[in-house]
Image (cartoon, rainbow, N blue to C red; front, side, top):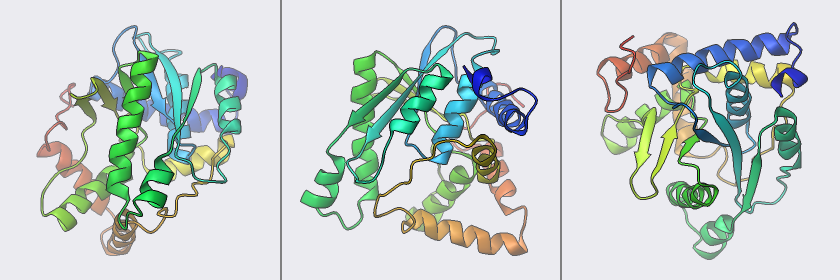
Length: 255
C-alpha cells in the first residue's frame, strides 16, 4: 500500500499529500468518480502517469466514495522501454497491473511511414485502450493530462486549427462506452517533477522518435518565452477556459 512506501513524516509523503489534495479537488469539481467503481489508470511509464497512479492510490484510502484502481500500459513496440519496474511499483502500491503489447510502432512508423504520426498514434492508442478496458470490464480510465497540457492544447487548437477548444475534464466515448477522466488538471508540471524527485518514481524513458519534436514542443517553447514578460499567462488562459466556459469545463461544484 502507499503507506508502506512513503513514510508519513518524510518529504515524499508531504509532496504526495499536496498533489493528492489538488487531485481530490479536481475529482470533486468535475464529479469524476462514482461509488464502488474501478478506475483504470493509463500508465505510460512517464512522470505524469506515475504521479497520477500514486495520487489515486493514496486518494482511495480516504475518499468518501469507495473505488478501486487498475493500472494499464500499452507497450507501443519501441525498443529500450522496460516496464518491469512499473509492475514492481504497482505491486508495492497494491494495484493490479496489466501490460498490453501492441504493434503500433510497426504499423505507424515502419509500414505506413507517417510523416506526422502523432494524430494517428493517438487515435490508434485510444482504440487499443478501449479494447483492453472492455476485456477487463472497466468503463472508466484516468489519463495524466495536467494543467500545462490543458493550456498547451488550448493554444495548439487556436494557433494550428483556428478554433477555441481543449480536451474535457470528463469525456464519454460513444464508440467504446469508456469515460475518460483527467484528475491532474489542477497540477502544474513543476509540482509533478518535485513529486517524482522526492519519491523516486520509476520513470521509463520514452524512446518514441517524436518525443520532444512535436508541435506541442513548439507551443511549450512559445509559452516559456511569453511567460518571461507575462508570468501569469498560463493562469489567465486556464482561468478563461473555466470561466467561458469551454464545453465540458463547467464545474459540478459551482466553485
